[in-house]
Length: 172
Image (cartoon, rainbow, N blue to C red; front, side, top):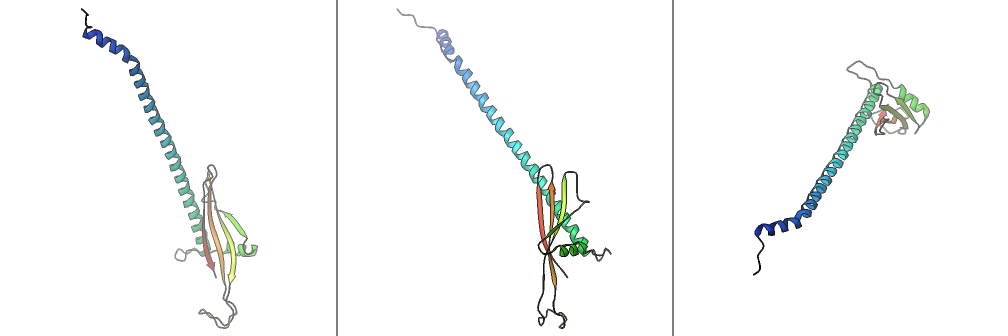
């Protein structure tokens, strides 16, 4: 008569055949967890770069906007504040000729990491011929209005982030 194997002998034989499978499953799980961690790290690095770029763009935009505002206040003055206007930069732009840009550095907005400038470009003087009236003196020959383009520029020297804001003005 044939003797049947005992239950413990059967389980021991089955355990021996499964010892390598547990190691393989463990290694696969470690690999999956490592890949997830690397993807999360890469994503967080990218988000940090995007946040830095956004902050630098915002900083240069505010500096260019401030430069443009300062230029307009300098030209027009502040009537209620008693600060007279100064159109000297516009007169210099007219002397240079139409389409020629003159750049002025704004030292009070400049920082060690950022250059801020305003450029003035004389466009043209528009006029109407005699006989056309826009509530002007009928004896005048030309009704003149001088057009300029003002640009506020800000550049971060280290990163190269830059912003340019343009505004047209007319000056009589």
